Structure formats: structure tokens, C-alpha cells
Length: 121
Image 1: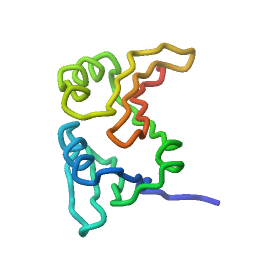
Image 2: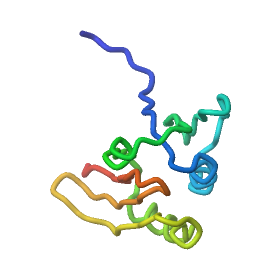
Image 3: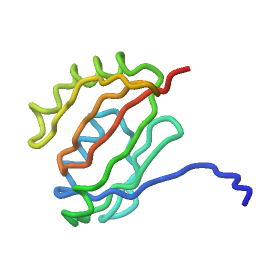
């Protein structure tokens, strides 16, 4: 198959839809409301759908990798947002370096694990 893709947009759930919407706006994503049950959040040319839906096993096993240009800068900016103080259940984990590159981690208010990483050039 020869794919000519334009984007990939995962669907993620939220234990508290309003709280999660505010969290992602604080994180710097732009919201496009698609209805009472779903919004599209984007940054640059990348985005995802946030749903007013919560299935614990699904959310607890959801991980998203967002490639960034500079993990250290991104980590510094994440820390400045002080999201764990503003949102319960939000956790930050510092930068880890691997053979392939580096990444830091953020759990959203529902428990979805975000990886913010950069590959070695």
C-alpha cells in the first residue's frame, strides 16, 4: 500500500471533560469545539480528539508520543506551567536519555501518559 497521509488524530477520553479541556488549553493546545461530547485540540499541524467519555481500562492504557524539537526546552516550559499544582492527578517525570533520543513525561488529569520526545539526529 502506498499511503499519502495528511495527519493521524487519536481519540482520547476524559474522566472530567471540562477539566481536561482546560488542562489542554493551559498546555498550549488550541481547542475547536465539535459538539457537547468532543473537541479537537491542535498545536501546529498535530492534534487529537478529546471525548466526553471515560473507560478506565482504556484511559489507563493510553499513551501518546509527541515529538518536539528540544526536550530540555519543552521540559523547562512544562515545569513553568506548574500543572500538578493546578490539576489533581497530573504528574511530571523528568527527562530520560536513551540510545534513540530523549523524552520527558506528563500524566493528564485522567491518567493518559504523554511522552514528549526528540530523536537523535
